[in-house]
Length: 229
Image 1 (spheres, rainbow, N blue to C red):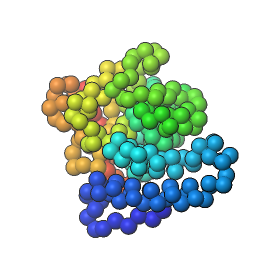
Image 2: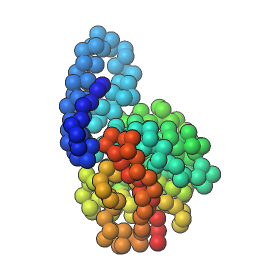
Image 3: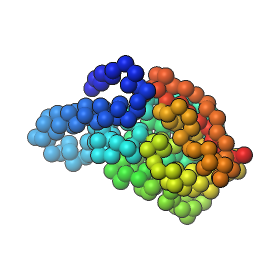
Image 4: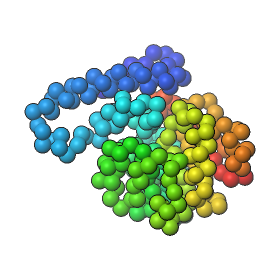
């Protein structure tokens, strides 16, 4: 699927999402027409890429994983120490960051994947059978669900710029409430600064710094490392 972007549009991520959503709808309709006569294939679920397209179209403001490419996945997982302990991933989507974590050396059994979309969560359970997959919103996860694990790092694939401030604060506070004292949360954004507002960080006793700028992603993205003060 080819997507033509006008000059400067990469700096306007919402317009990119809307343009991508239109292209996705055309792609889905084409795929439906091709496979209408093969019910057995549909019984096993759509291909992973097509599933990601469908979820993006269904809820473009809540799904950021489809526009996260390999370069961004490598950047957001670059500082993860595979030997440090379990890794909590928020909003893994189709597993772009998850695969990067495994490629970095994190054991699949040390992954805790929190995905609110039940269709995507089911696909993640199939793709990563050794991981703990929780079909919940990030802010609603409880300590009991983690089965005694304390994450040593958090990787977030959630498009926090599209979330209300109260929900962002709840997500970040919940994540740090489970983690080891020296854990860091790695968050991507398409905006010009950290998507967690300064007043939220002050209330939670956190600070952030940018670790990477990924120009090869469409749209270009930044990675921030958020830690306790």
